[in-house]
Length: 330
Image (cartoon, rainbow, N blue to C red):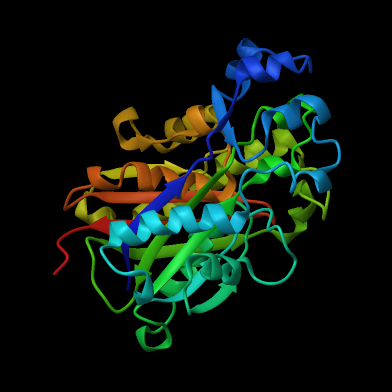
């Protein structure tokens, strides 16, 4: 069984609010944005003047216009997760990273983040786009305890505004940057344990959501949203059935793609407002870091006996989820 010991997150300081997007004169305004995606603002590693002046027409220039690298945001979120776990950095024996837009083809970003942290640890990347966090935990949840070190650091550095075409209102209104982190273990118990995990994919839809190398993000918007709603509901149902006999109430964290999508999922899955945790309205679509950042923001609110379903979807097409039960650490 896999235990979550601590979580962390980091949103860069620069803010893209709806007024900023309206100032770009790309035929959008706050009413249009809120009506379609429910997002009020997003954070970015990019310099706002760079966005204003270039619209990021050449994503190859975004590296030099960034306030942080993925390794740096990864290290910031990781330090928060390590502190939350109550361990020391040298206790980490493995780093696993993954997300939508790694800055380098090689080496693994896990190695770069480990170096930024000064860790002497194994480093590998496991990428499944926006499904990466649940996919990574599903992978670790299936490992024998003796196959892993005492503590594993899972990182999702998602600074995807570097891939956004700010002349395209369809995608410019969606993305924000965030990095999320979690410290997990198969050897040491904690208050949060992953009792079930699932992952599925439909490779025929690989071309529905893409970020080409040195290119802009693109997706088949309406089709992808319908897919995300269907598969999120399916994951919730699949995981609920694992413990339905206990009659437990479920808290829910979904893929932070857009607020209207999440509201549709909640209606279809009979999830009440007080069971639903989200941050999409304040931070935008943060890819694989979205759902775990919500978990990090609400970490101290979960009590013994609580049950959490986390369901995410991503390009590939993939959909994945984990069932987390909270209890005593003993």
